[in-house]
Image (cartoon, rainbow, N blue to C red; front, side, top):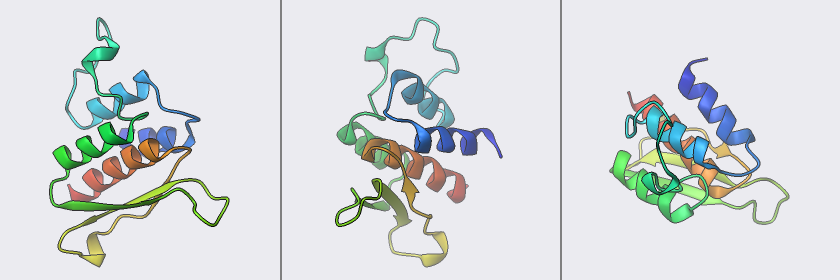
Length: 118
């Protein structure tokens, strides 16, 4: 499993988002430098804790993609997000990503879609 796959697993198993995960997602998407030295919280959007920030990231790095998401309505399951291109192409649909929060699941779905699209 590559580095992106390991990061997706970390997002899926994290109890909550944090600055370190925000940074690692930005690095994986080539949007930030590789080191945390001197980087401040204000330097990065809180994509693993804010659904608005995660959606903004999705629009930025995956233009032309849509995302289905749910919070386990009617079940005891965790939140999930699935990415798919528009127009819909079943062959390029990504599997749903599950995590403790929607922002974490969305970040995992973004990474999975970027990985699959490349």
